[in-house]
Length: 577
Picture 1 (cartoon, rainbow, N blue to C red):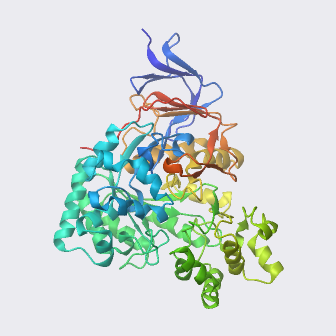
Picture 2: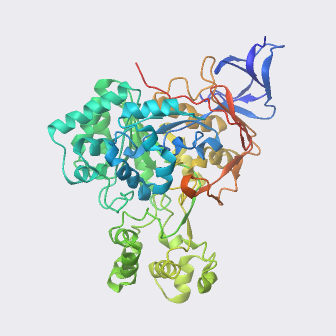
Picture 3: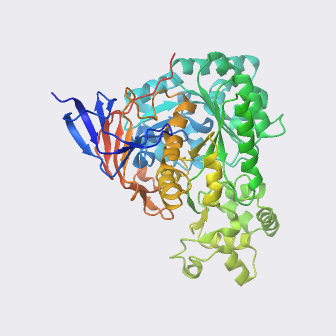
């Protein structure tokens, strides 16, 4: 009889704790790490040669938006293609429970513009009518029973919770809950925590929202006042378990988001992670102020964290479905509505003047939304006749040559192509040196993935591979030990995931084995392939990981190189006392 199910031989172990790397064999038995440093002569049913490779804990992706995709894609790709072994669902206050049967279509419509997931893809792929979950415990039970190639846990998303209790999405946007409704929402959140949920999440972007509903109107949580969120936080603190994930830019009664986070952290006593910490080289004070606040807060004992935007991520956009300029009031108007109405607005001279002003004021672009409009390049106009001459030219260059404003160049090209012309920008317009500033903060987790969202625009779910390729190998600005701490152990700590994210005897065998000299995104970081592999013929942009030789989930190999083994050993990670 073999000593182990699997024996990983000859690798260099980076265990996720910041302890310096060391060479050791790893023996795996019954899905757990049974032994680090095995005896000579140890046997196993399978031996993996890890010579020349790093052996590290699988990555934990805490910002995924795979709530729909996990129902048709057990591996939550693209994250699963990049060594992610555990995912958190229910991010930014979005999800598909609690939802009564008559609100199912409305719930899916909420995701079409915000997350660029096509309605028909969700309708076919989720098989909601077949499985019929409604409450959060129902949803957790459904996730538990479906095959999974990754581990998963779930936050309580506040948008469907508000709509469920208040009667509709529209009611939740137009009025504040009664005392009875607020009590009911708190009770439902606690019921979900009893079922194993790991906390709650929300988005609050104000009006207009950068991540709006299908019709361009704000989401319910975009207009939630501070005191209601603090009440949820107090309830979570009383429960004594779970964390808060927030995308907040619009506190109602506090001067800054940092001030509100301080109040929420003091009221809840629970870990809070905020999206999105971007080292913007055009506004250095923004990220440095937040990092200073993180350091000061931890000196006071507050458990607050930032989610760093650390992935090089070009954005390819068309005006057919681009939404991340929706926070600029006048661009919001021309980006939403029926095609013919949008065309009329874009041709209106008075509207154009307003659009030019918003570009000049840098209200569009930046903060992870393809960079300033002035820096866009015409990417995919081939096949549109006279527009072909603009391919690979920056809109600023075209504007100078033709005596136009950059807003007019973008609008004219979009109109001429019937919104099909592509523009490429940089969702992460900063330097490696500034990225290091973000990563040097011990309270920042690298990312940000959005792996199941915005899939027509970007491929941010490749962030683990890019971190190792770019910041570790190419730039040499952070150590692999620090990278793996941020990719695995730190998010596990923030989310309360026990022994996930670490190589330790007795811990679940969630492991990646990769070649540090060849690990990279394929196609290269600045290119993406277009896959039409979603239900109902839906498509997405994608990249894989080259040099990632093995991914293991609970001791079973799910990927060997680029090939999926078909194994589905993933578990629902329940948060229970």
